[in-house]
Image (cartoon, rainbow, N blue to C red; front, side, top):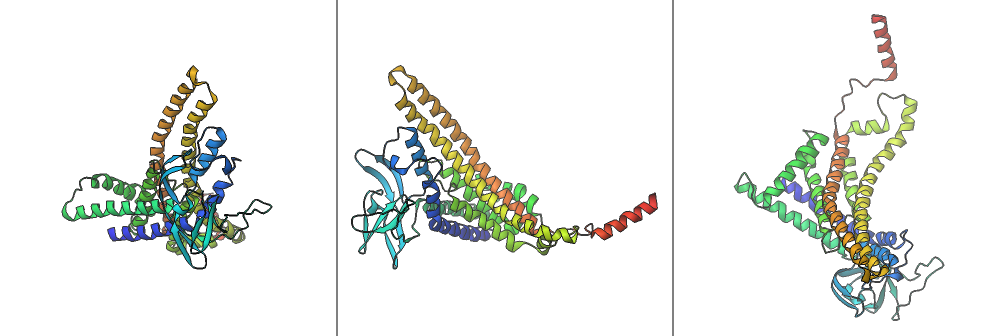
Length: 400
């Protein structure tokens, strides 16, 4: 069973990492054109955050994917302590260089005689002067190479996969020599048993749950560990990236679709016990239902994690806003700062619960959808309307 876990984890993480890398432009589009109405010119990486507009722009900046792991920054001196990541572009062949060439979007990157400029989180091909021309809708007219860079979210996804591999490898080794694990294994074993007994068995079924345990455990621990890393100073927002949640939900959809039995498809295309005319109207509704299920999965995870980050950074940003708007001498700003700090710590504790809860809900719903697809239906009570009417008449003749 452990080998099944590793295989499922490998394909899930590779798919998720690829989805993140190739869909980051759409994610950046969503962040850069958010409903806050704040232009990125109000906040640049490394700038001070003092006003409400700058706090809103900072939150938008945090929610985006990035080509850097920034640990420290000093705005006035343009000093950064960060880890640049590889930039991979397809522009007449693969172009690979480090993101440090952009110097946090402040300079033009030159590679193999080509010039590239970072503009609103996207990389455009430009000239030596870094010219960016805009059309009537304020969209750059320059060529945009296909970007499949190793971004911060991709690195975190691979890091989560490595953590899972090491944890379960250690647990598997312990089972070879002892019946009761020790160390981190004592933490993992109850969680694995919980997923098996409380999620997989009740929703997939006693006979078929083992086939899907690898996927369910992978999804549960991947989301949980990613959510926990999102609360660290790494500043990651992996499950708050729509590309990642789409990848996870798509895996659930594919497994559900290709594992479904004939009863599942029969209830979609020709529902038993329903008048033939109504069956025709139910077909598109049922087909739409197969798409709304994974859509609900991806939106629920994305929205809840994003909302948690927004609330937390709003409270932290309120500290600087209070300091700017109020007279420090009166002590009012200090009081407000302490209040918001305590509230932010409380929200962080709640986020620890949410990190586990979202992993649980996603895994539970995935198991439920899979269970509905593989369940064996008992059709002895499912008769055509004409047969039901005949039975009713027979009962009426006997007892009336």
